[in-house]
Amino acid sequence: MSGLKIGRAHKARKALFAKGIRRGVLTLEEIDRALPPGSLTDAERWLLFYSLRAARVEIRDREGRRVAMARGGGVPA
Image 1 (cartoon, rainbow, N blue to C red):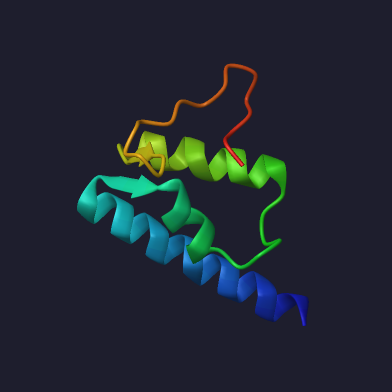
Image 2: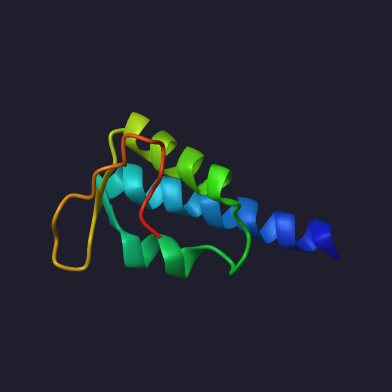
């Protein structure tokens, strides 16, 4: 059963990256909607945000403001 969860999460991340790279921007809401609930640990979520930024994908909040990663390694929930 966990293989199915991992497969869905992997496909969701791939689609999210493709969309982000194509558009150059993703919202927090889009990221949260795209990923199955509970599919990422805090460390995995941080790595996702870091990787999106490295791919030059801007992450914005609901109001369209750019979201900054916390200096201590945290990301917005």
